Amino acid sequence: MDTALTAIVTAAQMRASEAQLMADGTSEAALIARAGGAVAQVILHRFTCHPSVLVLAGPGHNGADALVVAAQLVQHGRQVTLICWRREPDEWLLAATTAGVQHIIDWDATNLAQTCASVDLIVDGLLGLGTNRPLGGDVLTIVQAINQRPPHVPCVAIDLPSGCVADSGALLGTVVRADLTIATGPHKIGLCYLPAMDAAGEEVSIDIGIDLDALPYHALTTAWAQAQRPARPPDSYKGTYGTLSVWAGSAQFPGAAYLASAAAARVGAGIVSLATPSALAPLLWRLPESTLTLLDGDVVHDSAALTDPRFTALLIGPGLGRSDAVSDLLWAVLAPACIGDRPALLDADALALLGRDPQWYTRLVPQRYVLTPHLGELRRLYGGVLPDLLPHQIATHCAQTWQQIVVMKGSTTLIAHPDGRLLVWPHPNPALATAGSGDILAGIIAGLLTQGSSPWAAAGVGVYIQGQVAQILRTQQGDAGTLASDALPLIPQVLKSLQ
Image (cartoon, rainbow, N blue to C red):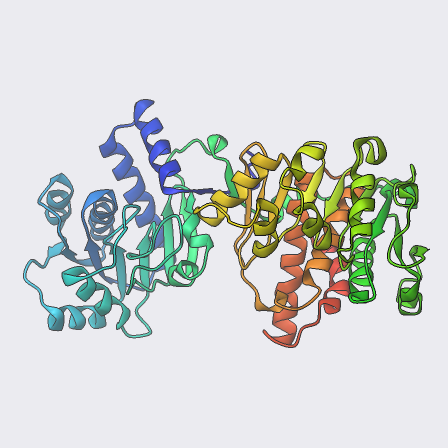
């Protein structure tokens, strides 16, 4: 595991990690004390002017963590009120009350609402990883009271806001709306998805001793992107950064060729060589830096024109069209004897054409390609009906089955490796919900491939760059009205931030 990445876990992975800690000699009690103590330290550091605290503790480890938090806050001078739900008396409750926590046993909706309105801070430790059914009864009453708190009263959730599903990010009816969620150990993958992401508020994690090197899922970070970005030595020239062959565009989708080629150039590819129908020539004056191969009709019948030995990487698919002639040429280009050992990115129409053959992946050299499907394209590649799995499970399953890097585009974008690793970009952005965004991403990743990045690194850094560009656009222009081409001049700006 790269320590520059942020670890993410499923519920099963978290349970396995905790079990390994205990197998290595850490007792369950020590683990709870460690987690609760670390959560308390975050609260003490972040909420220095919040003397009165309401702690809500449920059954299981999440509730035990909350009781440790309550005891430690009292020991640091905070006035703590405790309400338990379905928690039997145990050593953790005894320790909290012995420390001076005020335990309210008899409560109703009215006095609970009054308490939520009168304290300075609320800590949610009601439910954790095992939540699997809609909230009801007393716990629903408690959650509703939390959510009706005054705006000036923050709520901190331990591990997950109560009512959120750890793996899917689904909300089981009414859930706690937190201002801060403190993950005990790695972040839970459900909070990388909407709508749970919105319920979590800000997210931070604490170290409880889990071996992060053993975890396969991680969120993209600036530090990782900085480490993976291709070097730019001062004695370099254009040939240092490779030549990208782009096969894109058609009469129906002329802009795709421009967007993909321009994005590759903006991310630093040394030379971009575009093969596109001659009918598009009048539209390509905006690519004065690119070399052009203008095709008669929609295709050429000589695959060598697209796989010249000087090309270091290929980008095939944006706006290409789906005729039988294009399909025939695509397979000719992808033949191992033709493409050689060069990496390639396959997007859009190239993916649609691949999907016509149920065994398409057996015809490709393993771990040579980056595939960039959205969910509909992924469904066609898979054969029409995807397995009933969660998004991260689908992405990793497809990458392992196809033995290629899969970038599953969506509000949360997932990058899956055939060996089971997963990178996550958990920053939904409506500024990307516009025609041509996929062409931009394809060009960015292909441009990184051209400079020598591995398919894995190129996919991860490419998704990071587009995500950061989208955040800049959203800040500058808002949620609507952004054009995909608006992203192009911002790509170097994000690259500069990675220096």
